[in-house]
Length: 173
Image 1 (spheres, helix red, strand yellow):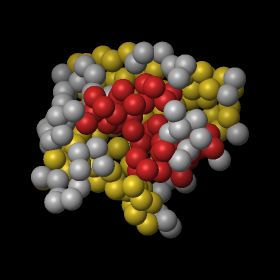
Image 2 (cartoon, one colour):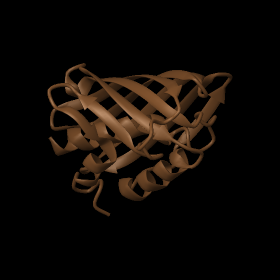
Image 3 (cartoon, helix red, strand yellow):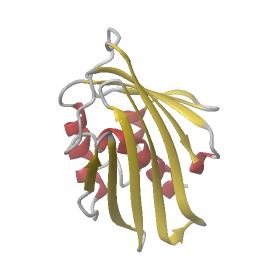
Image 4 (cartoon, one colour):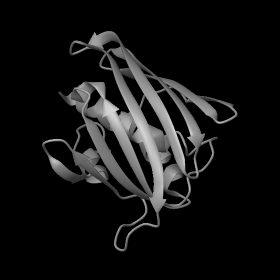
């Protein structure tokens, strides 16, 4: 279960993290990010994230510190299509991730992230996530840049950064 939580946490952050480096910047404001993840039985989750000019770079720096033994991401761009690939050594094996994104990062983008585990981890060979992200306007009063509220099926609303802080090996550095 820990691996699934860590993989899910990393996969949820990937759409934001990949934008921080050599990619087009997302428009500051409130983004609604809908994800469908295979590790959660294909259930859809909705995250509302408030960003400013430094949010994506801050998330990338935090994830780099927390993930440990990972290769630097390889980023390729062709028009509105971007591919990100990386590999991390985890639990005596390798987790190879490939994300493909397209769209206009100032208003709407979509993507698919696939992580393959070699050897399989806890019976899981692959985790897939579909992403549909849209800018929905200015951040609401009281929601700070970097904060993310997520609606999880059967759980309700959670604060994603706070949840990730409580995952051993991810949030406690």
